[in-house]
Amino acid sequence: MNELTIIVGAGQAGIKAAETLRQKGHDGDILLIGEEAWPPYQRPPLSKAYLKGELAEERLFLKADDYFETADITLMTGARVAAVDPAAHAITLSDGQSMSYSRLLLTTGTRARILPLPGADLSGVHTLRGIDDTKRIGVELARAASVAIIGGGYIGMEFAAVARSMGKQVAVIEAQDRILKRSVAPEISDYFQTLHARHGVRLVLGEGVAGIAGTARAEGVELASGEIVPADLVLVAVGAAPVTELADAAGLAVDRGIVVDEACRTSAPDIFAAGDCTVFPSQRYGRRIGLESVQNAADQAKAAALSMLGEEVVYDPVPWFWSDQYDVKLQIAGLAQGYDRTELVGDPGEGRFALRYFAGDTLLAVDAVNDPRSHMMARKQLAAQAQAMAA
Ligand SMILES: Cc1cc2nc3c(=O)[nH]c(=O)nc-3n(C[C@H](O)[C@H](O)[C@H](O)COP(=O)(O)OP(=O)(O)OC[C@H]3O[C@@H](n4cnc5c(N)ncnc54)[C@H](O)[C@@H]3O)c2cc1C
Image (cartoon, rainbow, N blue to C red; front, top):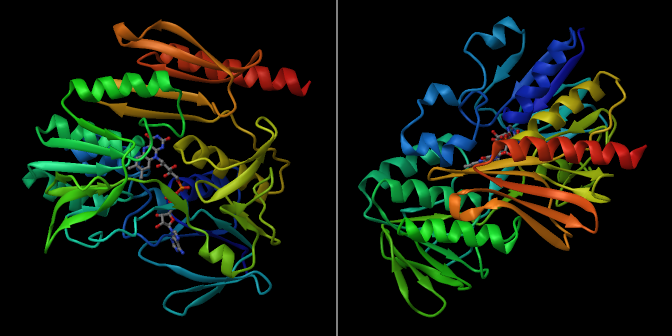
């Protein structure tokens, strides 16, 4: 019997790993199993161009229809893996079917966090993670006059920009004292707050949410102060949590995400993991980190594929990420946590600048606003700096 590699999760990481195995000449069977009804697709446009109706659905898909046959990769969509048995080297699907693997890769991603609030199950209350969410939201958004977004992170702020560009009345409610606080310095939060305010978004900062108001449908968001922010549509955008239940139940090490080493190996033999669902050791940052980005999904999946083929791999990337809001592109290289000073390059007033984060003399990260050149230079500099430190 041919050896079989099973990949659980047909997203950005899953397809990259399958593709890499084939590119590297692997001739064993490859089975890519995804619970969604769709072939692998990119998620970033779901809160940007696709939500706005400016990107056709087929442009979301990461591979052409005939790719799977040509590359001899078996794709099972609409199929959920219900259990993994590491000792038997087997998985079980939710329909009871079992299969044995030679090697298993978990690329199960994250799912949107929900808020256990009164009224959270009313119709008109949404989270945004997949194509089906954007389709559902798109229909309601077209009809809505007002939108309230709970959470001032990237997805919430991108959604606010799209809704405003469609002429909706938009409010963003953020429990912290500024938006995007988890990843950027106050200077960048200020810039985006001013940008959104200028476009007419109401920002409610430092205020908790008591519940969703409404009877059959959402009619607004009730703040802790008792005020009701009117809304025909509510988006709950309070982050995402790694999907780890398969790994948990199989007894794999899990610590927020599925724990892997620098070669993407989990704590069980022949089981690897990559993408949003993992946490991995970073020499660069001196701690275990988890990343939610296309960069990490693609690069770690590639590393996992090489590792599965027995190549020596040390995955320790320069992380990068982007966000589009109105006509502004924010590009982030590195991780800013632990910085003790920032340096501004360029002029925020002109809408093009970069903010550099340092710990002592060490550059940690660069946020570039409408400045792709600074972003690319930062990625090179961060990579070179790490090489110099390792030498
Ligand atoms: C709206 C939105 C906007 C984004 N914008 C950006 C951006 O601008 N820039 C950026 O860098 N990143 C962005 N991201 C993040 C980026 O899309 C993710 O980091 C990336 O998709 C992670 O890829 P992944 O393969 O690890 O997980 P996913 O793409 O989530 O794929 C995991 C797949 O596994 C499936 N699965 C889970 N459990 C099972 C099971 N038991 N059986 C079968 N299948 C299973 C899931 O259904 C899912 O399809 C955005 C994400 C969202 C949701």
